[in-house]
Length: 332
Image 1 (spheres, rainbow, N blue to C red):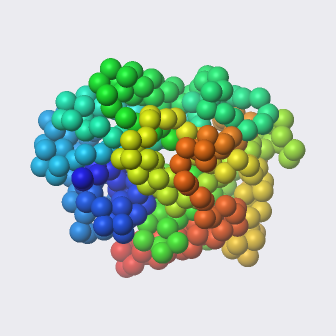
Image 2 (cartoon, rainbow, N blue to C red; image 1 turned 30 degrees about the vertical axis):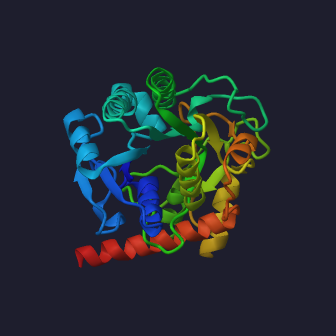
């Protein structure tokens, strides 16, 4: 009954590992540490450094640990980087997922949870996005994830695999117990960047475009607390184990906040003003991404606990302060 968590030393994956360990679930982590950190996961959890595209390694992990379910987080996720380096994204996000699925199916793993993204939708009309909305990604990142979704759907139909695909909207915040959080040095997540600027780690931050067709001209996103997101994964895992049919589900709160609203929330939480510069739009950024969440609530007994932007920002800011102190201690 062991759960394999790929990318388990990363931001969202490490939260999943802690939650599984807290619940007494046997868990094993596979991560190449390109953006993850070993210190983010419990020392008691088996850790293997490697790639999801390494089929012999994945075969050995599944056999050795008795893996019966996989939660697949491992991916490259930076939209602008995917535009400048698309082949890396298709290799890591699409081809490696195909390799992982092949190994899992041949080993008899039947339950698979896939970390997808709202970027599969691309530019959408105003209003919350439904799972059956047209998919027209604006970036290789979104396309690489959509291609992996298609592969997963076809594999499930052909080989009897059952899956839940969770299309994340904008994940933010940190473990309320401060055991893990976003630690990537080059992370581009808005709330993390704003928190880093608020504590002085960055001299300034940028707003990429103020001419979008939104109330204040900046992009609107549906921000979801990372702990609520991993709760959805745990709920999806229980759903599959109880015989639930394969499903693709949006994972958000169903309401959005603009870039300016996020910056204001960080200023409130930190009690500090900080420099913000306006730059041109970035390629691949749609004006608005907000989830329609009717399907996930109809499918899973998932009830978010942290549906408040100020709470998300408070946890993210506390983590950034702890992380800064940890890194300062490491070099002193």
